[in-house]
View 1 (cartoon, rainbow, N blue to C red):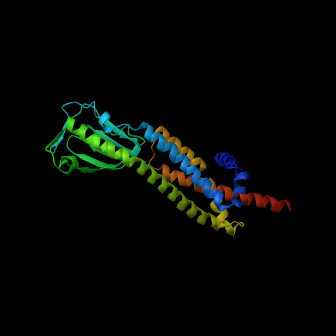
View 2 (cartoon, rainbow, N blue to C red):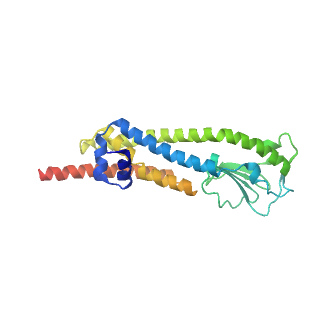
View 3 (spheres, rainbow, N blue to C red):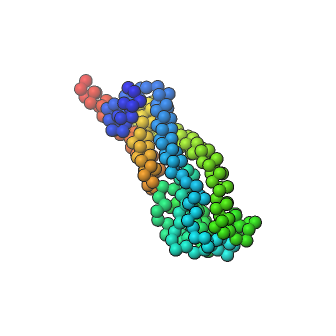
Length: 260
């Protein structure tokens, strides 16, 4: 069966076909796993890079009177969100008490009137005062003109760093999948007490369990949705896929035994 046929069968939870994948070589299953993750990661990375916009351009419309000094930052009538999807980061200027509209990002930098903070989206941020603001070390204050000048340097750094960040992120995703699929396969191989199934066979089946979850995760990333427990749901779905596949093998063998 071709990889495309296997993808369709896995996506459609066609367990009668999926259980036959356990007899194929380890390398074919590994190749499927790698291709699926690379394809998903490449699509997401391409989307992030295509949507990226320079910081300098995004802060161009800030009020000319806006400035930051060691006492605080100027007040803004509205919240400004500088989006950097290529590094999963959003910088929020102005009102930071309500952080709506930042779905799809992982890292958060808030620059408020009395202080600034950094952290992860969906989690409490680490609050800091402007005495520790990195760009104020050699300056008494930062005007809009200064910020645009600094942002141009940052844009060049991000432009260089972003591809590396995305490559590392993709590699880590691949590594995590390999490790967790292996762990789930170890757990699944405990079913050998009920039916003859090897670790390799469970590993092969588990590889195909990521199909539907990774499609959903990719769509969520493309649409800009962010769910804190998505990773947990993802791996629960993979585990259930493996269990249901093994259960199908057991049921099939019971039917065969009864028939004989």
